Image (cartoon, rainbow, N blue to C red; front, side, top):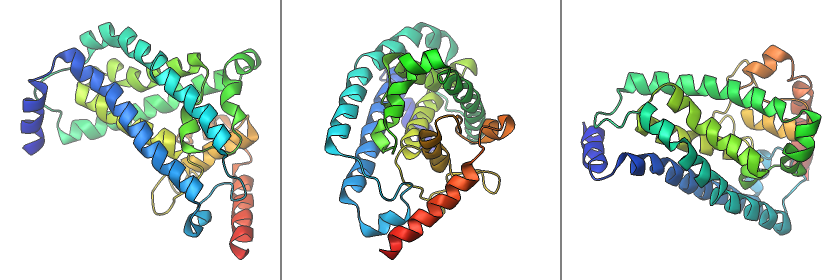
Length: 265
């Protein structure tokens, strides 16, 4: 198997710590490659893209982008590195650094487990941040952005940056996963958090929902930024269970109306 041979050759030249550190490298590369691509689209504003924009009449300004970028870069180079180093002693004991890659079946089952664990962690952790005292001192900063754009996904207070880093790593540590699965998950999770903040709903061309049960995850999170106390999760499962998706259907109808209005002009 080509992947297995490549991994054996690659991993044999690196220490366990270096392999673990690739998770941080994968995070940075994914974040800025994908984030800047979405940002370029936002500033280019091609006519075809307006059909997919969640808030068609709103666009980000250069001043806001600079403020957000400063926050994200500073914390990626400090808080995130600190958190990766902090969890390394635990990761060293819990993760597998085997030269044998997990099977395709194990990869699929593990990624599904990660998704469920992330939904639980993110929903309850996010909802806790809306407790007035925590919101005022921590989470309010993220909600300064009313019309999300990709790189504002990590526009956070440092404590929330730490929370986000731990949420990305914990599933793999809990399940004693192979380090390659951690790296893959970090790439996937980073891409999705950027997608869900990019301000564009690409469905049906890019599947982003558990249809027919839930709306686009991008729309769910865009609605959260507008409604404040709705849609705390990722998949929509726990929002449905707790009834915190109230109003999302109406939001979607308003979006369709706004999109139609923009296209007529």
